[in-house]
Image 1 (cartoon, helix red, strand yellow):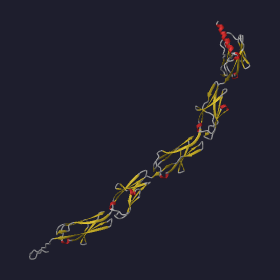
Image 2 (spheres, one colour):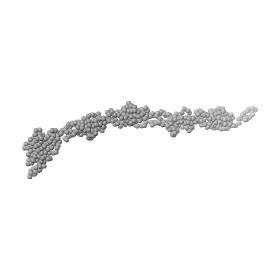
Image 3 (tube, rainbow, N blue to C red):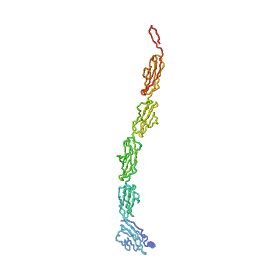
Amino acid sequence: MEIAVICFIILGVISGLTRGSGLLPDGPLNATVGEMVMFNTSLPPTEKPFVTANWKFGAKNIITANIVNITSPGYEGRITFFPSTASLELRNLALNDSGKYTIIITPQGTEEISGTTTLAVYARISDVIVTLSSTDLVEFNSSVRLSCSSSGSSPSFHWLNGSSEVTQSDRVQLTDGGANLTITNVTRYDEGQFSCQVFNPVSDDKSEPVNISISYGPENVNLTLDLPQEYYGEGSNIRLMCSAVSTPSAQFMWFLNGDLLNDTGPELRLINIQMSQSGNYSCQAFNSKTLRHETSQPAVVSVLERISGASVTSSPNQPIEGNPVNLTCNAAGSVFTREWMKDGSNLSQDFNKKTLSFKSLSKKDKGKYSCRISNPINSEVATYIMIVNYGPDNVQIKGPSEIHLKKPLTLHCSAESTPAATYTWTLNEMEIHNSPVFTKRTTELSDSGNYTCEARNDVTGRTSSVVHQLSVTGTKMVLIRDDLDLQLAP
Protein backbone atom coordinates (compact mmCIF):
# COMPACT_ATOMS: atom_id res chain seq x y z
CA MET A 1 0.00 0.00 0.00
CA GLU A 2 2.82 2.48 0.89
CA ILE A 3 4.70 1.71 -2.37
CA ALA A 4 1.60 2.43 -4.38
CA VAL A 5 1.17 5.83 -2.69
CA ILE A 6 4.80 6.77 -3.37
CA CYS A 7 4.51 5.81 -7.01
CA PHE A 8 1.37 7.88 -7.25
CA ILE A 9 3.14 10.92 -5.82
CA ILE A 10 6.11 10.49 -8.18
CA LEU A 11 3.83 10.21 -11.17
CA GLY A 12 2.05 13.34 -10.02
CA VAL A 13 5.31 15.26 -9.75
CA ILE A 14 6.53 14.01 -13.10
CA SER A 15 3.22 14.95 -14.63
CA GLY A 16 3.68 18.47 -13.29
CA LEU A 17 7.19 18.67 -14.81
CA THR A 18 6.19 17.76 -18.33
CA ARG A 19 8.45 19.48 -20.84
CA GLY A 20 10.89 20.35 -18.00
CA SER A 21 9.05 23.20 -16.34
CA GLY A 22 10.86 23.80 -13.01
CA LEU A 23 12.95 20.67 -13.28
CA LEU A 24 16.22 22.60 -12.85
CA PRO A 25 16.80 25.88 -10.94
CA ASP A 26 16.63 29.11 -12.84
CA GLY A 27 20.04 30.22 -13.98
CA PRO A 28 22.54 31.32 -14.17
CA LEU A 29 24.25 29.30 -11.48
CA ASN A 30 27.46 31.10 -10.47
CA ALA A 31 30.55 29.08 -9.65
CA THR A 32 34.26 29.54 -9.16
CA VAL A 33 37.13 28.16 -11.23
CA GLY A 34 38.55 25.00 -9.56
CA GLU A 35 35.52 24.49 -7.38
CA MET A 36 32.27 22.51 -7.91
CA VAL A 37 28.64 23.09 -8.78
CA MET A 38 25.58 20.96 -8.03
CA PHE A 39 22.80 20.70 -10.56
CA ASN A 40 19.91 19.61 -8.36
CA THR A 41 16.69 18.51 -9.98
CA SER A 42 13.38 19.18 -8.33
CA LEU A 43 12.43 15.48 -8.40
CA PRO A 44 11.90 13.70 -5.09
CA PRO A 45 14.27 10.79 -4.45
CA THR A 46 13.07 7.42 -5.70
CA GLU A 47 14.46 3.89 -5.54
CA LYS A 48 12.89 3.06 -8.90
CA PRO A 49 15.42 3.95 -11.59
CA PHE A 50 14.51 6.03 -14.55
CA VAL A 51 14.46 4.38 -17.95
CA THR A 52 17.09 6.88 -19.15
CA ALA A 53 18.62 10.12 -17.90
CA ASN A 54 20.86 12.15 -20.20
CA TRP A 55 22.89 15.27 -19.16
CA LYS A 56 24.19 17.58 -21.90
CA PHE A 57 26.45 20.65 -22.02
CA GLY A 58 25.18 22.45 -25.03
CA ALA A 59 25.04 19.75 -27.71
CA LYS A 60 27.74 17.66 -26.00
CA ASN A 61 26.85 14.66 -23.85
CA ILE A 62 28.14 14.62 -20.30
CA ILE A 63 26.63 11.36 -19.06
CA THR A 64 23.93 8.97 -20.24
CA ALA A 65 22.40 6.92 -17.43
CA ASN A 66 20.65 3.74 -18.48
CA ILE A 67 21.31 0.21 -17.45
CA VAL A 68 24.94 1.29 -17.70
CA ASN A 69 26.17 4.89 -17.06
CA ILE A 70 28.25 6.25 -19.93
CA THR A 71 30.47 9.25 -19.10
CA SER A 72 31.71 11.33 -22.02
CA PRO A 73 35.43 12.03 -22.44
CA GLY A 74 36.65 15.06 -20.44
CA TYR A 75 34.25 14.38 -17.59
CA GLU A 76 35.80 11.27 -16.12
CA GLY A 77 36.54 11.88 -12.46
CA ARG A 78 34.85 15.28 -12.57
CA ILE A 79 31.20 14.29 -12.14
CA THR A 80 28.96 12.41 -9.77
CA PHE A 81 25.50 11.32 -10.92
CA PHE A 82 22.76 10.76 -8.35
CA PRO A 83 20.32 8.13 -9.77
CA SER A 84 17.61 8.78 -7.19
CA THR A 85 17.02 12.39 -8.36
CA ALA A 86 19.00 12.48 -11.62
CA SER A 87 21.04 15.38 -10.10
CA LEU A 88 24.60 16.01 -11.24
CA GLU A 89 27.73 17.32 -9.44
CA LEU A 90 30.44 18.90 -11.63
CA ARG A 91 33.91 19.44 -10.11
CA ASN A 92 37.21 21.14 -11.01
CA LEU A 93 35.38 23.84 -12.89
CA ALA A 94 37.05 25.77 -15.68
CA LEU A 95 36.00 28.92 -17.46
CA ASN A 96 34.95 26.90 -20.50
CA ASP A 97 32.42 25.06 -18.35
CA SER A 98 30.24 28.13 -18.57
CA GLY A 99 27.15 27.60 -20.73
CA LYS A 100 23.80 25.81 -21.09
CA TYR A 101 23.13 22.54 -19.27
CA THR A 102 20.18 20.26 -20.13
CA ILE A 103 18.79 17.06 -18.60
CA ILE A 104 16.42 14.76 -20.47
CA ILE A 105 14.65 12.09 -18.37
CA THR A 106 12.48 9.18 -19.49
CA PRO A 107 10.65 7.86 -16.44
CA GLN A 108 9.01 4.47 -16.45
CA GLY A 109 5.50 4.56 -17.74
CA THR A 110 5.43 8.28 -18.57
CA GLU A 111 6.59 10.48 -21.34
CA GLU A 112 9.98 12.16 -21.53
CA ILE A 113 10.65 15.30 -19.48
CA SER A 114 13.54 17.79 -19.68
CA GLY A 115 14.98 20.85 -17.96
CA THR A 116 17.54 23.51 -18.77
CA THR A 117 19.71 25.93 -16.79
CA THR A 118 22.90 27.90 -17.35
CA LEU A 119 26.20 27.94 -15.51
CA ALA A 120 28.56 30.92 -15.26
CA VAL A 121 32.08 30.06 -14.11
CA TYR A 122 34.29 32.92 -12.88
CA ALA A 123 37.95 33.18 -11.94
CA ARG A 124 38.39 34.83 -8.55
CA ILE A 125 39.34 38.51 -8.46
CA SER A 126 42.92 39.12 -7.22
CA ASP A 127 45.97 41.37 -7.59
CA VAL A 128 43.99 44.61 -7.68
CA ILE A 129 46.38 47.51 -8.31
CA VAL A 130 45.75 51.26 -8.81
CA THR A 131 48.21 53.43 -10.77
CA LEU A 132 48.30 57.23 -11.04
CA SER A 133 49.00 59.28 -14.14
CA SER A 134 50.57 62.06 -12.06
CA THR A 135 51.44 62.85 -8.47
CA ASP A 136 52.31 66.54 -8.92
CA LEU A 137 48.88 68.14 -8.88
CA VAL A 138 47.96 71.82 -8.58
CA GLU A 139 44.49 72.96 -7.65
CA PHE A 140 42.42 74.21 -10.63
CA ASN A 141 45.31 73.54 -13.02
CA SER A 142 45.80 69.75 -13.03
CA SER A 143 43.91 66.61 -13.97
CA VAL A 144 44.64 63.07 -12.82
CA ARG A 145 43.80 59.61 -14.13
CA LEU A 146 43.63 56.57 -11.89
CA SER A 147 43.70 53.13 -13.56
CA CYS A 148 42.60 49.93 -11.86
CA SER A 149 43.90 46.53 -12.99
CA SER A 150 43.23 43.08 -11.60
CA SER A 151 43.30 39.34 -12.26
CA GLY A 152 40.03 37.42 -12.52
CA SER A 153 37.09 37.27 -14.87
CA SER A 154 34.22 39.65 -15.56
CA PRO A 155 35.44 42.39 -13.22
CA SER A 156 33.21 45.24 -12.09
CA PHE A 157 34.84 48.35 -10.63
CA HIS A 158 33.93 50.48 -7.65
CA TRP A 159 36.01 53.52 -6.60
CA LEU A 160 36.38 54.82 -3.04
CA ASN A 161 37.95 57.92 -1.52
CA GLY A 162 38.50 56.79 2.03
CA SER A 163 35.14 55.23 2.83
CA SER A 164 33.14 57.45 0.46
CA GLU A 165 32.05 56.25 -2.95
CA VAL A 166 33.35 58.19 -5.94
CA THR A 167 30.54 58.96 -8.37
CA GLN A 168 30.55 60.48 -11.81
CA SER A 169 30.06 64.25 -12.15
CA ASP A 170 31.01 67.11 -14.45
CA ARG A 171 34.64 66.82 -13.31
CA VAL A 172 34.71 63.08 -12.59
CA GLN A 173 34.56 60.58 -15.45
CA LEU A 174 34.49 56.78 -15.24
CA THR A 175 35.57 55.04 -18.46
CA ASP A 176 36.52 51.55 -19.69
CA GLY A 177 33.76 49.98 -17.66
CA GLY A 178 34.81 51.94 -14.61
CA ALA A 179 38.43 50.74 -14.68
CA ASN A 180 39.67 54.29 -15.27
CA LEU A 181 38.80 57.27 -13.05
CA THR A 182 39.63 60.75 -14.37
CA ILE A 183 39.32 63.94 -12.30
CA THR A 184 39.73 67.20 -14.18
CA ASN A 185 40.60 70.59 -12.66
CA VAL A 186 41.31 69.03 -9.29
CA THR A 187 40.49 70.86 -6.07
CA ARG A 188 41.79 70.35 -2.55
CA TYR A 189 38.61 68.47 -1.75
CA ASP A 190 39.66 65.74 -4.20
CA GLU A 191 42.56 64.82 -1.91
CA GLY A 192 42.49 61.51 -0.14
CA GLN A 193 43.26 57.79 -0.07
CA PHE A 194 41.82 56.35 -3.28
CA SER A 195 41.21 52.62 -3.66
CA CYS A 196 39.58 50.42 -6.24
CA GLN A 197 37.23 47.57 -5.31
CA VAL A 198 36.83 44.92 -8.01
CA PHE A 199 34.18 42.21 -7.84
CA ASN A 200 32.37 39.54 -9.85
CA PRO A 201 29.52 37.26 -8.81
CA VAL A 202 31.81 34.91 -6.89
CA SER A 203 34.51 37.15 -5.35
CA ASP A 204 35.81 40.63 -4.70
CA ASP A 205 39.13 42.25 -3.83
CA LYS A 206 40.35 45.74 -2.99
CA SER A 207 43.54 47.55 -3.90
CA GLU A 208 45.94 49.16 -1.51
CA PRO A 209 45.06 52.88 -1.24
CA VAL A 210 47.01 55.43 -3.22
CA ASN A 211 47.30 58.96 -1.88
CA ILE A 212 46.37 61.97 -3.97
CA SER A 213 47.91 65.20 -2.67
CA ILE A 214 46.98 68.50 -4.27
CA SER A 215 48.99 71.69 -3.97
CA TYR A 216 46.90 74.79 -3.34
CA GLY A 217 47.12 78.30 -1.97
CA PRO A 218 48.43 80.38 -0.43
CA GLU A 219 45.28 82.10 0.73
CA ASN A 220 43.87 83.67 3.88
CA VAL A 221 47.28 85.17 4.65
CA ASN A 222 47.06 86.66 8.13
CA LEU A 223 49.55 88.81 10.04
CA THR A 224 49.30 89.05 13.83
CA LEU A 225 51.35 90.63 16.59
CA ASP A 226 52.17 88.61 19.67
CA LEU A 227 51.24 91.43 22.08
CA PRO A 228 49.46 94.09 20.02
CA GLN A 229 49.81 97.65 21.27
CA GLU A 230 49.06 101.04 19.78
CA TYR A 231 52.59 102.18 20.63
CA TYR A 232 55.85 100.47 21.59
CA GLY A 233 58.71 102.00 23.52
CA GLU A 234 62.18 102.09 22.03
CA GLY A 235 64.11 99.03 23.11
CA SER A 236 61.04 96.79 23.11
CA ASN A 237 61.05 93.30 21.62
CA ILE A 238 58.20 92.60 19.20
CA ARG A 239 57.15 89.33 17.54
CA LEU A 240 55.07 89.29 14.35
CA MET A 241 53.62 86.03 13.01
CA CYS A 242 52.36 85.23 9.52
CA SER A 243 50.10 82.32 8.60
CA ALA A 244 48.51 81.10 5.38
CA VAL A 245 46.35 78.27 4.13
CA SER A 246 48.70 76.45 1.78
CA THR A 247 49.87 72.99 0.69
CA PRO A 248 52.78 72.59 0.71
CA SER A 249 53.54 75.04 3.51
CA ALA A 250 54.08 78.56 2.26
CA GLN A 251 57.38 80.40 2.28
CA PHE A 252 57.27 83.88 3.81
CA MET A 253 58.92 87.22 3.02
CA TRP A 254 58.59 90.40 5.10
CA PHE A 255 58.15 94.03 4.06
CA LEU A 256 58.37 97.37 5.87
CA ASN A 257 56.54 100.20 4.13
CA GLY A 258 56.70 98.12 0.95
CA ASP A 259 60.46 97.54 1.12
CA LEU A 260 61.68 93.93 1.26
CA LEU A 261 63.44 92.96 4.47
CA ASN A 262 66.13 90.31 4.81
CA ASP A 263 64.01 88.27 7.21
CA THR A 264 62.20 85.12 6.05
CA GLY A 265 60.01 82.53 7.71
CA PRO A 266 56.63 82.69 9.41
CA GLU A 267 57.95 84.74 12.35
CA LEU A 268 59.62 88.14 12.44
CA ARG A 269 61.38 89.18 15.67
CA LEU A 270 62.23 92.83 16.22
CA ILE A 271 64.78 93.04 19.02
CA ASN A 272 65.54 96.37 20.76
CA ILE A 273 63.35 98.18 18.25
CA GLN A 274 64.10 101.80 17.36
CA MET A 275 61.92 104.64 16.09
CA SER A 276 63.37 104.20 12.61
CA GLN A 277 61.64 100.80 12.51
CA SER A 278 58.17 102.32 12.83
CA GLY A 279 55.86 101.74 9.90
CA ASN A 280 53.54 99.32 8.11
CA TYR A 281 54.68 95.71 8.26
CA SER A 282 53.31 93.06 5.89
CA CYS A 283 54.17 89.50 4.97
CA GLN A 284 53.92 87.72 1.64
CA ALA A 285 53.24 83.98 1.40
CA PHE A 286 54.57 82.04 -1.61
CA ASN A 287 53.82 78.46 -2.70
CA SER A 288 56.68 76.91 -4.68
CA LYS A 289 54.35 74.32 -6.25
CA THR A 290 51.44 76.50 -7.31
CA LEU A 291 53.77 79.47 -7.97
CA ARG A 292 51.14 81.68 -6.40
CA HIS A 293 51.61 84.37 -3.77
CA GLU A 294 49.43 86.53 -1.56
CA THR A 295 50.23 89.47 0.73
CA SER A 296 48.74 90.05 4.15
CA GLN A 297 46.98 93.13 5.42
CA PRO A 298 49.47 95.63 6.92
CA ALA A 299 50.13 95.83 10.65
CA VAL A 300 51.13 99.23 12.02
CA VAL A 301 54.05 99.31 14.44
CA SER A 302 54.53 102.73 16.06
CA VAL A 303 57.71 103.12 18.12
CA LEU A 304 58.14 105.99 20.58
CA GLU A 305 61.21 107.28 22.39
CA ARG A 306 60.69 107.19 26.13
CA ILE A 307 60.35 110.49 27.99
CA SER A 308 63.55 111.35 29.86
CA GLY A 309 65.38 114.35 31.29
CA ALA A 310 62.26 116.37 32.03
CA SER A 311 62.99 119.89 33.32
CA VAL A 312 61.35 123.26 33.86
CA THR A 313 63.56 126.29 33.23
CA SER A 314 62.93 129.99 33.68
CA SER A 315 63.79 132.69 31.16
CA PRO A 316 67.22 134.29 31.82
CA ASN A 317 65.81 137.43 33.41
CA GLN A 318 65.14 137.32 37.13
CA PRO A 319 61.48 136.84 38.09
CA ILE A 320 60.71 140.33 39.37
CA GLU A 321 57.31 141.64 40.24
CA GLY A 322 55.80 143.52 37.36
CA ASN A 323 58.22 142.06 34.80
CA PRO A 324 57.46 139.30 32.26
CA VAL A 325 58.91 135.82 32.70
CA ASN A 326 58.53 132.44 30.96
CA LEU A 327 58.69 128.89 32.33
CA THR A 328 59.59 126.28 29.72
CA CYS A 329 58.91 122.54 30.04
CA ASN A 330 61.38 120.36 28.11
CA ALA A 331 62.25 116.67 27.86
CA ALA A 332 63.90 114.24 25.51
CA GLY A 333 61.71 111.65 23.81
CA SER A 334 58.39 111.55 21.98
CA VAL A 335 56.29 114.19 23.76
CA PHE A 336 52.53 113.85 23.39
CA THR A 337 51.20 116.02 26.21
CA ARG A 338 52.34 118.53 28.83
CA GLU A 339 50.28 119.22 31.91
CA TRP A 340 51.04 122.22 34.14
CA MET A 341 50.24 122.33 37.84
CA LYS A 342 50.76 124.89 40.57
CA ASP A 343 51.02 123.72 44.16
CA GLY A 344 49.37 120.43 43.09
CA SER A 345 46.41 122.01 41.25
CA ASN A 346 45.97 121.76 37.49
CA LEU A 347 46.37 124.88 35.41
CA SER A 348 43.77 123.69 32.92
CA GLN A 349 43.96 126.80 30.78
CA ASP A 350 47.61 126.08 30.14
CA PHE A 351 47.17 122.38 29.30
CA ASN A 352 49.64 121.03 26.74
CA LYS A 353 51.61 124.26 26.44
CA LYS A 354 55.35 123.99 26.31
CA THR A 355 55.85 127.51 27.75
CA LEU A 356 54.00 129.08 30.63
CA SER A 357 54.12 132.87 30.16
CA PHE A 358 53.66 135.60 32.77
CA LYS A 359 53.28 139.05 31.25
CA SER A 360 53.55 140.82 34.59
CA LEU A 361 54.56 138.85 37.66
CA SER A 362 52.74 139.37 40.90
CA LYS A 363 53.40 138.11 44.39
CA LYS A 364 50.59 135.55 44.06
CA ASP A 365 52.46 133.86 41.24
CA LYS A 366 55.04 132.45 43.60
CA GLY A 367 54.80 128.73 44.37
CA LYS A 368 55.75 125.23 43.19
CA TYR A 369 55.15 124.69 39.48
CA SER A 370 55.10 121.16 38.05
CA CYS A 371 55.07 119.98 34.45
CA ARG A 372 54.07 116.40 33.61
CA ILE A 373 55.38 115.34 30.19
CA SER A 374 53.72 112.20 28.82
CA ASN A 375 53.39 109.83 25.92
CA PRO A 376 51.60 106.44 25.81
CA ILE A 377 54.80 104.72 26.96
CA ASN A 378 55.80 106.69 30.07
CA SER A 379 55.77 110.11 31.74
CA GLU A 380 58.04 112.29 33.87
CA VAL A 381 57.37 115.24 36.18
CA ALA A 382 59.69 118.24 36.53
CA THR A 383 59.26 120.99 39.14
CA TYR A 384 60.30 124.62 39.53
CA ILE A 385 60.00 126.81 42.61
CA MET A 386 58.90 130.27 41.53
CA ILE A 387 60.30 133.03 43.79
CA VAL A 388 58.87 136.45 42.90
CA ASN A 389 61.40 139.17 43.71
CA TYR A 390 59.80 142.42 44.78
CA GLY A 391 60.23 145.45 47.00
CA PRO A 392 61.34 146.97 49.10
CA ASP A 393 57.83 148.08 50.00
CA ASN A 394 56.22 149.51 53.13
CA VAL A 395 59.46 150.67 54.78
CA GLN A 396 58.86 151.41 58.47
CA ILE A 397 60.91 152.65 61.45
CA LYS A 398 59.86 151.58 64.89
CA GLY A 399 61.24 153.35 67.92
CA PRO A 400 60.69 156.40 70.19
CA SER A 401 60.15 159.86 68.79
CA GLU A 402 61.41 161.43 72.04
CA ILE A 403 64.03 160.17 74.46
CA HIS A 404 65.76 161.54 77.57
CA LEU A 405 69.30 162.47 77.50
CA LYS A 406 71.72 159.66 78.37
CA LYS A 407 69.14 156.97 77.74
CA PRO A 408 69.79 154.06 75.35
CA LEU A 409 68.27 154.32 71.90
CA THR A 410 67.03 151.50 69.59
CA LEU A 411 65.42 152.08 66.22
CA HIS A 412 64.13 149.18 64.05
CA CYS A 413 63.83 149.53 60.29
CA SER A 414 61.79 146.96 58.28
CA ALA A 415 60.57 146.54 54.73
CA GLU A 416 58.60 144.00 52.69
CA SER A 417 61.14 142.61 50.24
CA THR A 418 62.26 139.44 48.48
CA PRO A 419 65.11 138.87 48.76
CA ALA A 420 65.59 140.63 52.12
CA ALA A 421 66.54 144.26 51.81
CA THR A 422 69.77 145.88 52.96
CA TYR A 423 69.48 148.99 55.12
CA THR A 424 71.33 152.30 55.40
CA TRP A 425 70.75 154.79 58.21
CA THR A 426 71.43 158.53 57.96
CA LEU A 427 71.04 161.25 60.57
CA ASN A 428 70.50 164.65 59.19
CA GLU A 429 71.78 163.33 55.83
CA MET A 430 74.92 161.82 57.29
CA GLU A 431 75.32 158.03 57.07
CA ILE A 432 75.55 156.51 60.48
CA HIS A 433 74.74 152.79 60.24
CA ASN A 434 74.13 149.76 57.95
CA SER A 435 71.76 147.20 59.45
CA PRO A 436 68.04 146.92 60.17
CA VAL A 437 68.55 147.95 63.83
CA PHE A 438 70.23 151.15 64.96
CA THR A 439 71.25 151.26 68.63
CA LYS A 440 73.08 153.70 70.87
CA ARG A 441 73.83 153.01 74.49
CA THR A 442 73.80 156.65 75.59
CA THR A 443 72.07 159.41 73.74
CA GLU A 444 73.38 162.93 73.43
CA LEU A 445 71.60 166.08 72.58
CA SER A 446 73.31 165.83 69.22
CA ASP A 447 71.39 162.62 68.51
CA SER A 448 68.24 164.61 67.94
CA GLY A 449 67.18 165.05 64.33
CA ASN A 450 65.76 163.26 61.28
CA TYR A 451 66.69 159.59 61.06
CA THR A 452 66.32 158.19 57.56
CA CYS A 453 66.27 154.42 56.83
CA GLU A 454 66.79 153.48 53.22
CA ALA A 455 65.96 149.87 52.22
CA ARG A 456 67.48 148.41 49.05
CA ASN A 457 66.73 145.21 47.08
CA ASP A 458 69.84 144.20 45.19
CA VAL A 459 67.83 141.93 42.82
CA THR A 460 65.05 144.32 41.88
CA GLY A 461 67.46 147.27 42.05
CA ARG A 462 64.81 149.26 43.83
CA THR A 463 65.14 151.43 46.96
CA SER A 464 62.65 152.95 49.36
CA SER A 465 63.14 155.07 52.50
CA VAL A 466 61.32 156.51 55.45
CA VAL A 467 62.16 159.41 57.87
CA HIS A 468 61.77 159.24 61.62
CA GLN A 469 62.15 162.35 63.79
CA LEU A 470 63.77 161.97 67.20
CA SER A 471 64.09 164.55 70.02
CA VAL A 472 66.60 164.12 72.86
CA THR A 473 65.31 166.05 75.95
CA GLY A 474 66.80 166.94 79.39
CA THR A 475 69.43 169.36 81.09
CA LYS A 476 73.14 169.04 80.63
CA MET A 477 75.12 169.52 83.97
CA VAL A 478 78.49 171.27 83.62
CA LEU A 479 81.02 171.46 86.56
CA ILE A 480 83.04 174.73 86.56
CA ARG A 481 85.91 174.94 88.99
CA ASP A 482 86.03 178.72 89.51
CA ASP A 483 86.16 179.88 93.05
CA LEU A 484 84.88 176.33 93.69
CA ASP A 485 81.39 177.46 92.80
CA LEU A 486 79.07 174.88 91.20
CA GLN A 487 76.98 176.28 88.36
CA LEU A 488 74.40 174.76 86.10
CA ALA A 489 74.75 175.46 82.46
CA PRO A 490 71.74 175.39 80.31
